[in-house]
Length: 292
Image (cartoon, rainbow, N blue to C red):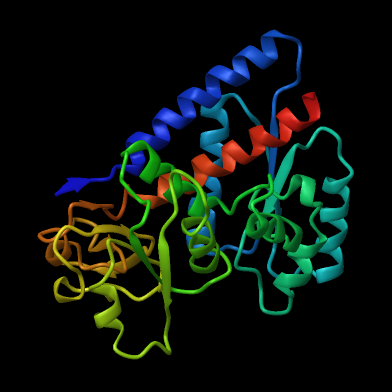
């Protein structure tokens, strides 16, 4: 079994981005600018946004945080999005999800200029992805693809099972893995909450990507010997074995599944760091487009 370290690969990606940014600035171009809108005080969102700001500094990006309390109206939020759409200095921006219940997330996502949609959630970005056209890929699926590439994991002709069908991970992941590309070419099956005999399907997977949002859902008897296992889930649970009294676990029971897998991502330190690395890559793509 070999650990797939998103921490190590994201560090390598950031180093490459930082080098390109330094060359751009030295040539007289402005620094890439990534903006983030965060509404409310969701703990996971706060941590994620802080990581994004830190990562921007590491690669030489300019970053902006725009914060609102959770009582902001949808109209006010859409007005801010419109300002960022028209700000030539901003190369890309995201609206951190989830949003308060009184704000319609679909409306917000569709208000973002597709040319600045570095999260890759806009319907135009998704449509281009499905057609295989150049576009911003959703950050987490793109990060997973990067891990498979850099670990030189064979994917062509393999059976990839994706557990979870969200618009953020599961569905775009299935599209990317079925593409006619060197790093894809998989036969893909999607499982979800209504799938019957799910363990029979997961046991067929050469590559198992789990994004269901259920702690330790995948057990050792649900995985075949030698499978590549990618765990997208992250959950904070109580633990009497840590000083803090808490620990982070994934959707996969690592202790059981790691004994059977050929490659596996840990939680934390697996997929998570790659999501931010992909966001930075998308922002750099936006900058390159303007320079042409």
